[in-house]
Image (cartoon, rainbow, N blue to C red):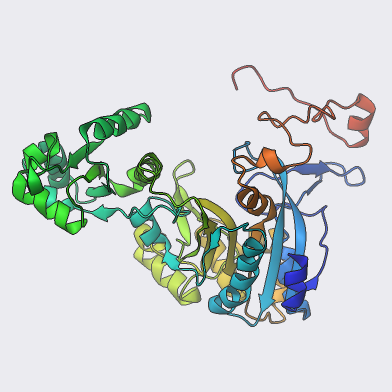
Length: 450
């Protein structure tokens, strides 16, 4: 990574570890200050503000292999506590400039260690909404050829009363089809239905096509919607005798993740996934805001320092039009995905201070809050900041994919366990009263059940 970034004309800098708390989407690890009682440093979730300040200072291409710290629950694709990322920023660029610069770098890294596996050339750019609709995920595994489609109209006013009733009752309801090439047997369809029930769903409707019924299809759904509709679904999805199709219905915002899991399951069960590839793509046009159901307010969907498409004018217009308009705003944000994992995330930044303040005001912060929390960057922007953007690629995830591991712990030195304990060093551990007094810290043990 270093060699390729140096060849691309980037300067390497190391940014501070002890910094201020910043909203990067996760909890901070806090470090109490002995010299300033009652105040805390934060370990950086990412060097976001520092790298943007470097752009203001005149270094137009920055990178570092940056340690990052996030107080998150452990997962297979996320280590507890800390990880490393290839962090970078560029000045005087638009989104396409970043793509043209970084796509060869990331492609080259995979090619160097591919060991005969294919690596995508000319990555597709998939809008977020399209990724959700086709793959049920914003990090789709494109080795799987299955593409979902909307088949709502084939069920409207049909004899399949469950779906027809839902469609008539709520305009948000859609029916999505998950094609299953070569899956046209009752045994496989029943197995998928059982899997869905194990995932907490009532079931998974299906039609399968075999010689006996022809285009009319077989299964309870086919019998209820009739031969004409079943044939129309087969034609729309370009399915043949020996294939099947599964259906899920409701508000897509509530079921798309399950639909994506079903797509993955079908692909792996039918051995459709091309295991000998690294399938890379850009996911673009992420929502700028999302609805925070817990706090009942608008919140940032991704990186809060991103530029909304349309700038301040788009923010002000959407604010006048209400919540739905705000939630439909898109951002100059993008991810790199590979084989079902997000391996990088980035954006073109919001480099105009008045636009930055407006973006935060919509989430409930005032200009005074912005100045207090992001004062260094806000003040620097007053002198004029170049248009800039960047991204960060997860080094650990890239290594995991290259070596074919299934869990980040398999490629980590001294990994913590699933309870975020370092059993070797005995961390986290209790500290003595003397240390706590020096730090002006008192331990308040949580009450049982809270």
